[in-house]
Length: 127
Image (cartoon, rainbow, N blue to C red; front, side):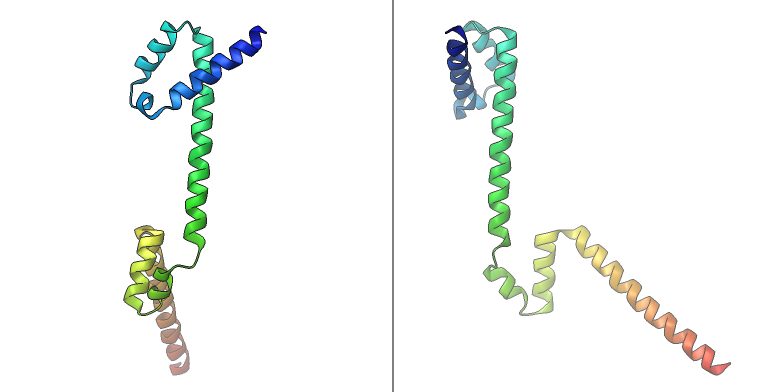
């Protein structure tokens, strides 16, 4: 019976900590309030860990849902195929500046290698 009471108390504690108004408070204020309600430091720690885990899982679910939305073909992808400049804007928006720089570096290397190969072929033919 005591274990059931403890579970009920910890569930109430978790619900309290997940409330948007309480989330705005500092950790010290939340812990102080829970201590005043009679929770032991172990119970408070357990409750905080549980809330952190639940919050982490909800954030993960939220990010996964956002990722699924991004995977759907959207109008921006269709519009990006309209011109190279729009494609460039889409790539920067979706993948970031680092990816753009790596793509430009790869393109530059390919051009350099093509020219160097042509020079070597011309030099070989001249010899």
